[in-house]
Length: 397
Image (cartoon, rainbow, N blue to C red; front, side, top):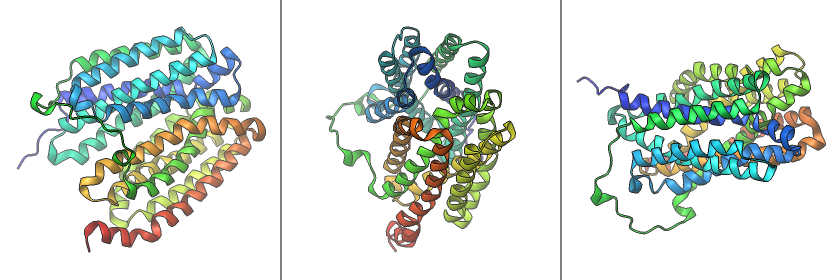
C-alpha cells in the first residue's frame, strides 16, 4: 500500500514559517547582548538577561497558548503569532534604554511562543498519521537550519553593517513569515468542539512527573549551551576571533545535521546510555577547548565538539523523556522537557552573566565543562540506574 505524501504544499509552508521565526531568534540572540553593552552601557549580567528574557517570554507564550490553539483556530493562531512577532520586531527601533529593551525582548519572545506553538500544532495535523515520526523529524530540522544560518547572518551583519541593519533584516524575515502563514491550509476542529469549557491553571496539567528527572538533566545541559549562545560573540571579540566566530554555529549545525540520524538509530538499537554518556564527554571537551581557544581552528573545533555533544544530547534526552511514560502521556512529557530546556536557555544567560565579571570567560567555560561532566552523573542517578524498573512500570510487566 502506498503511503500518503509527506512533502506537501502545506507541510513546506508551515516548515518554512517555523524556520523564518526561528531565524530571527538566532540572528538576534548572538548580538543583542553586545547591543545592550554598546548602545546602553549595560553590565554583563544585564546583557545576559537581555539575551535570556526572550526565551522566558517564549516559555510563557507556549504555556498560555498551548491550551487555546484549537479554541482560537490553528491557522488563525499562527497568523496572530506571526503578526505579533513582526510588530514586536519593529519595537527594537523604538527602544532607548536597557529597561525598554528588556520589555521588547520579552514581548518578542512571547509572540514567538505563540507562533511556534501554533506551527508545531498545525504540522502535527498536516502530517499523515502513518508518517508522524518521520514528518516531525523533518519539521524539526527547520529549526536546526535556522540555528546554522541565523547566528552567521547576525554576526556578519554586525561586522559589515550595524545593529539597525540587523533589526531591519529581522523585520523583513518576520514579514515574509507572516505572508507565508496566510497561504497555509490546515485541518481545524469543527465549531462544536471549539467551546471553551473553562480554563483552570494547574502545574499538574503542565508537568509529567516521570519526565522531570530527564528534563532536569536537560536543564543542566542547557546551561552549558546558554553560555555559548549568549556570550560567544563578546568572548570572540576579546580573543580577536570575530571572523571565525561568525562560522561557529555553521560548524555546530553541520555536525548536528550529519550525526542526529546516526545517533537516533544507534539509540534505538543499543539504548540511551551509548549516546548520552559520550555526548556529555564530547560537550565537556568542546567547552574545554573553548576555554583555551587562541586560534580560529581551536574555536571551530570546539564548535564541532559542542555540536556532537549538546546537539545530540538534547535529542537523546528528549527521546528518553517520552519513552519513560505511557503513550497517552507523551504530550505532557514533551511539554515538560521543553519547559525545563527553555528555562535554562532563558535564565541561564543572566545567571552566568553574574559570574563573568568575577571569573572571566575562560573560567566560565571551564566551569561549564565540569557541569557537562556532572550531567552524565546526574543522568545515571536520576534515570540510568532506574531504567529497568521504569520500563517495567510503563509496559506493565
